[in-house]
Length: 156
Image (cartoon, rainbow, N blue to C red; front, side):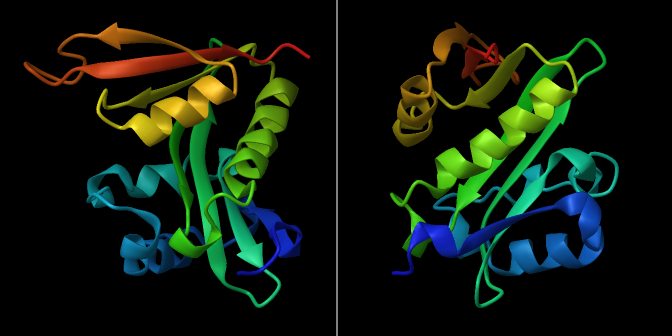
């Protein structure tokens, strides 16, 4: 496993959105244990790409990424956070979130939210370790489809 400091963060705005999206979807199973392909809508790369980042190794490999946005009312929403299977537990997820947090603060955001399935214990543990509080949104995405909304402050 490579050291986490061999990684460079590159904003999606500096890249070809369709090419990056295609590469990440082709490598989907290295990043995800469940099918998240429907959550990779082109809008996250094209229209909201200025808020996303790609973690690239010194060898030019895609090793992590984050899709997010800051809304007009200054809420930062972290849509997807992914670290390639061989780069987990290296601090890369925290680095991706720190990159997004800095951008969100610079845009005026005061709060960041993420949404997770209640059974996604890894995501819930990750976000709560960063200081997020969780509240249950019953039927959050439809009948019987509960979600946890994880919220944390972005104050310095």
